[in-house]
Amino acid sequence: MREHHESRRPRRRSTGLLLATALVLAGCSGDQSALSPAGPYAQDPHDLIVIVTVIALVVFVFVQGLIIYSVVKFRTRKDDDGSLPVQVHGNTKLEIVWTMIPAVILAVIAVPTVQMIFSTMEEPEDEHLVVEVIGHRWWFEYYYPDFDVYTANEMVIPTDTPVRLEMIAGDPGHSQDSAVIHSFWIPALAGKQDLLPNHTTFLNMQADEPGTYLGQCAEYCGLSHVNMRARVHAMEAADFDQWVEEQSTPAEVPDGGPEAEGRELFHDLGDRQSCAACHQVWEGDGARSPSQGPDLTHLMSRDEFAGAIVDLDEETLRQWLADPNSIKPMQYEVNGIGMPDLDLTDDELDALVAYLLTLQ
Image 1 (cartoon, helix red, strand yellow):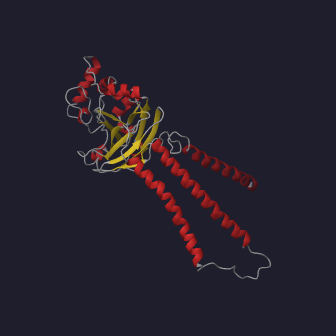
Image 2 (cartoon, rainbow, N blue to C red):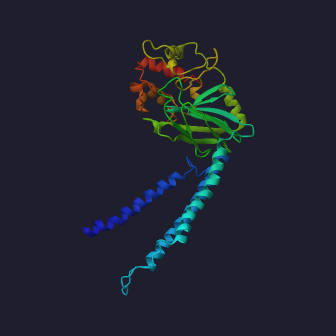
Image 3 (cartoon, helix red, strand yellow):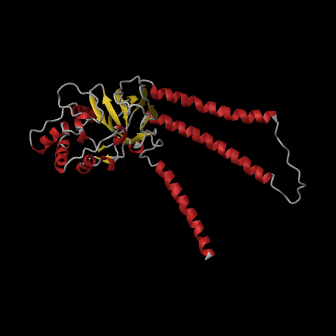
C-alpha cells in the first residue's frame, strides 16, 4: 500500500508541473498579452520587457553560479579541521562593487523606461484620432469629439493611425461613479494608464493590422471590477469612415407594433425609473450628450455589452433586462450604481427587447 502511494507522488508532481506550464503558456497566448505587440506604442513596452528579462536572467545565472560554486567549493569534507573559510565581511572594495552593480543596472533600465513613459503620453506629431475615454463602474465610455459619436465597451479605430486617448474616471455629475480610479489596458496596442477622478490622463495607441484586441480595467474598482472589460476593433480607414457615418445618424423611430410600444416604455415606465433616465437614444432632435449609462443609439452595432463580458444577442439582452445581477453583480440597491432590476412584466420585456433590437 505504501509503495502504491509513493508511486503516485511523481505523477502528482508531474501534473502540477504541467498545469503550471499551461498557465504560463496561456499568458503568452497572444489573445491578451503584452508579449504580442500589434502596434508601435505596444512595441516599446515589449522591448523594455525583453531588456529587463535579459538583465534579470544574467543576474540570476551569475548569482546561482556563485551559490553552486560556494556549495561545491566549501562543502564539508572528512579531513576538515572545523575552521571557517576566509571571510570577506568588511572588505570595502567588494562591498562597493556589489553595491554599485545593482545601481548601474537600475540606471540602465531607467533610461529606456522614462523615454517610453513620455513617448506614450506625448501628443503624436502626425495626424491622429482623438478618443475620450471615461471609466464608469463598471464599463468604459468612448466619445469621438471630431464626429460627435458616443459608444461604449467597444472602441473602433482605423489602422495605421495614431490614436490619442484623453481619459478620466467617472461622471462628475454622479458622485458615486466618479470617486473611483480605473486603469485602461489593451496590452497588444499600448501600455497601461490610470483614469483618475477630476484629472485627465493621456495614452497613445495604434494598430498595424485590422482585428479585435482585448483589454480590461487593470485597477480594482469595486464589486464588478473583474467584469469591466474593453475591446478595440481596428479596421481599414474606409471601413472606419463608414462606421463613423453610421454612428453619426440618428436612431430610427418605429411607427407601430411592439417596437413602438417598447420605445414608449423606454421613455416611460410609470412609477419605475425609465430607461431614458440613464441611457440616451439619439433621434436627431437636438445635440447628443453624455448619459449616465451607455449610449444605446446604435446598440445592436456592437458585439458585446454589459462591460463587454457577454455577447449581444436577443437572448442575453432579454436576460439582462429581466435580471441584470444574474449577468453582472452590481450595487444598485445599495448606492444606485449599475443597472437596476426594473421588475418588468413579460409583455413589457417583449416590447423593450423588440425596440432595442431595432437600434442598429
